[in-house]
Image (cartoon, rainbow, N blue to C red; front, side, top):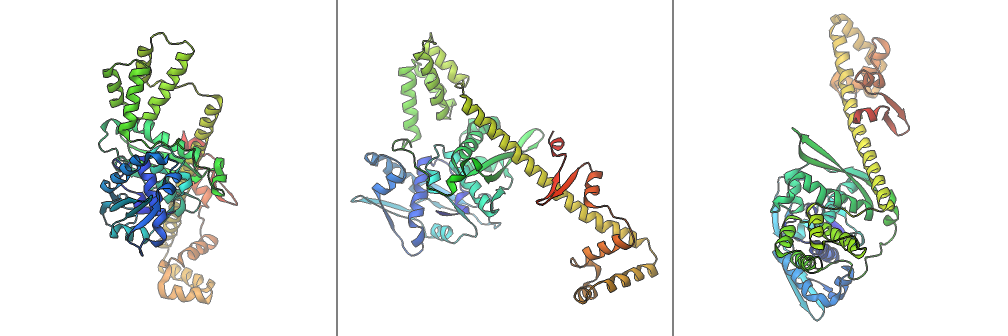
Length: 447
């Protein structure tokens, strides 16, 4: 489906993974006639099939649709359209279920924004169905936008930590806003899920001020490990694999499991659920403890389970999982190296252009007026008729003439360092291949 980039960069607040996926599907279903029709419809069966959800849970579907009626969406949170514009509306303006059909509508202004964007991003509904984390889907949508704009690779702008907190909707989750916790429970897990399940590969860079992280930038490239996702439909998860539960329902189930199967007290269970907001992590730890119990490795089930959750015990990883993580880390380091190399070379090129202009100006200013006029006359004679016309009209300040004058001076009157020598004087060793300039000592720069 095609999504307006400003719609992607929204404040997500309380919206769940299920609600976000459902809204994407409803938008895709209505997109072709978005401006022509006021009300759109889709079969309930088709909707729940795409969501990979059991149709008998229609009650939960209704609750999720009602939540979309109350969910406020803001666009242009990151000012990505480079316009000073802010807007807000609800994600859906009306819904109705009758005879197995869902009728729904968007607000008029939201329809206009969705259908006539200044920039677009394509979101694959088959890929989105594979995500189990709401944060992975949010980050995927953001990165796909910038990936497409850069045609094959890309990067987001620097996003302040305050904006990122708003982007993923944890403004009211104070315990998740400490960057160390946010990176472990949200950023790293979202990146790992995207890199494992989608068609793009994402890495993150951090900007620090006085040792404090103040902004993030995401780098995006083709995911070579899952390149087939680009050319075939992705098989959706089996029915029931995608949970249609609200956060409260999931919390209640975890509470019952912790108190019944693992004998935690009411106080212990509530304390852990109020401090550990990553329910997937809780499930993983409980599964790990359960396996230990079956192997008779746990004497005091309640005490061991409480400590395992409190200390964030991690299940032992398989060799395959470790190798995948190592490969992912290697890819992230390689992407970071390439991004740093590009940043340094781009800066050196800009500095080199300024150096050449300044060197020639200083040389010319040291000559007598007569010699200056003589050089300019010789230079004019070296130009073809087209360039002569530009030179006579705009002089040496013309952006088209300046490079020719610098080359003329370096060939006939003075020595100007070539680009590799200029870079070497500043501590950078460069070499050139068919793809462009490369840094020989990039590893030293990253130490």
